[in-house]
Image 1 (cartoon, rainbow, N blue to C red):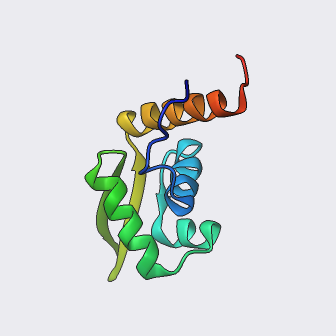
Image 2 (image 1 turned 120 degrees about the vertical axis):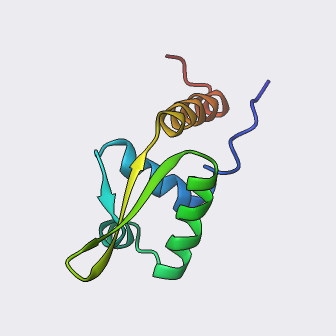
Image 3 (image 1 turned 90 degrees about the vertical axis):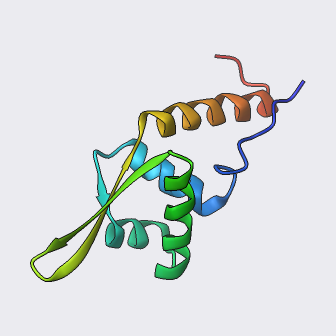
Length: 96
């Protein structure tokens, strides 16, 4: 029987964001935008969704006079990502 994939992570951009953050301590908005090829508006919306779910922590500060948005994956986000991968493997019938 297949497990339902986490709909929050099943979005291509949100999965790309989480996949990127899982391997980094933190990343700023510009870096995530560049690596995902997203528009600023779409990225902002997707970061808000991940943050609201508790999957990432978003910190808004300033670097000099310029706004700086830093993102980190939360422990809950790591767990959700690991569950997503395991659930996806069940679709592929991959055994660990």
